[in-house]
Length: 134
Image 1 (cartoon, rainbow, N blue to C red):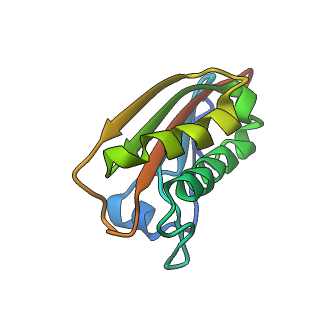
Image 2: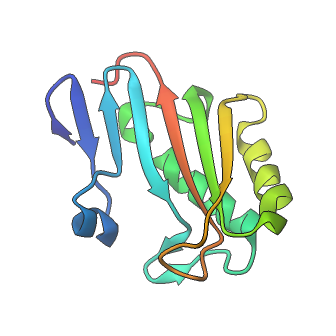
């Protein structure tokens, strides 16, 4: 992790972070923001063809980005889901409900024109709030 005590950043092995000059997650005080997360890993799109599976993989990866800050699903206060097809709303919603149904974060679901990889059906973002993240 890098940054000042008030703002800390983590990186992953994602090539997009290098390409864009971005962080995987940033903690600012007690708030942790996780970058957009898609299901690809190592050039493979996990759950290819299944919006439900892709959403689970993406959310689990986003949740893993909270771990260096000592946070997890119970600390998530906001989720965003970006879908390339309206037909996938129920499947992505089911994955979200399985992971966050007990937590009930505020959530937004948006349809987009597409993603950088056409095999991707969903991308997610999460925000978490916790105790001391420093």
